[in-house]
Image (cartoon, rainbow, N blue to C red):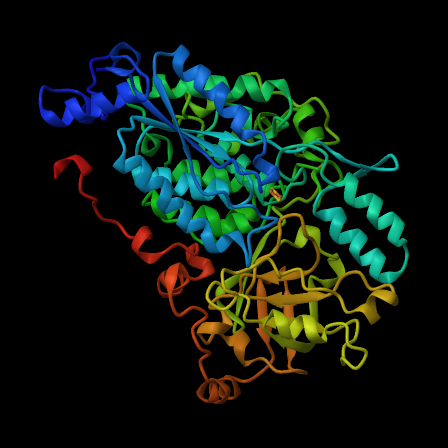
Length: 573
Ligand code: FES
């Protein structure tokens, strides 16, 4: 029982006189616990994505101890569960292939074990949506502990941004403007501490979205991973989730349509990663809440970009935190947010924001001096993207936002890699580089190929941005005039599969158009001649993925996870 008289879910495992409860309690003794250490206490699952191969989460083993401290302190019983780690750096072809797998693992652990509440620990890109999707489906009280960004990078006194500066200096190395020795030094300065990428990449975007949804303690998402405030936040989250169990405050009480709308506004004001479109649509789907690309486009026209954080701005996450963090930024948007909804604190979102301030307006800009008056993200449609495509135009050369040029088409990443730097490639500055076959099924897993490389010969001529179109995603730390997430993807017969070298492709961000300048009859003729490619997987998890994955505009969830329905109580049989 909780102090308020609520029966704990875990009581179904531990209470009663029968053999079942006897057996479960005997095994608690085997774990070294006396009855008074766990009986009648909320069991808190600490779902930890720590792994020795994931540098973004390398501090989470230690941080779980602080969460445990908070749980014990509040009268709960903490149990750590190691769950899959999705390392953006190391997992191939992309951790996106495994986001739904982690979400299933989370959901089923929470459902099948004697768990009353959960602390979700992670932050590297897909980890946040995976944890939250699983927890939303399980429906228990849950709180998120973001891994926190790493410290600023450094090279000869220059600030370095993980990801963004790696791409930038890679282009400079290919253009011959930095030496091999410079490049080797940069390698040691890019990522100097535990924590997630310190730009406004997918990790920082999604942890901020989690905070805006009301799933973290206020201000948690931007605390640098190695700051002692991060230790204190972890302990406080452990303490708070025990209280949430007592109050019966479940994740479904926090995740509302209003919460998702505020999360979209937050992402836009941050100039956040395009990946958030896919993840938030998938997360909302698990909450039974309709959210679409149309919502992103509508809100993007209303919300200014206020965070001057790379790649859209100048600064890094450490600067953002010291400037007031997400609470500071949200205080700027306060009048447009849904302030009455409940968060994991048990208070309203508005109460959580009370007292928030901006300490450095050069990092968190005022409404009358934004980085961009609009959200910087546009949803494009047209005969090349009937179900939508996205572009983060705030990180693109403005001159390219209205452009028509001849296509240079690559079918799959291998084809791209083999020919992009070939001296014989017919490509000019005004060409539109097209990659077909980088989508959810074709990629497979929709890898972050979308910042398609600029051909060597154009780089040497000083070209640094071009219009690029693909059904792939791009890293949130990337930049450029890259049209992404074209849906439906080429692998399932989307129009991208029909484009040929020399076809004129039009991008018009203002008009929200992505079009190939061909008559419908010609597209129909090509479609009739199109031969579907072989499935990318024949067996195993890959086949499950291939058979059930939805398209980018639908969130790339598995249709059987996204659909409504009930799941039997594990104790009912
Ligand atoms: Fe983990 Fe960037 S590699 S957040």
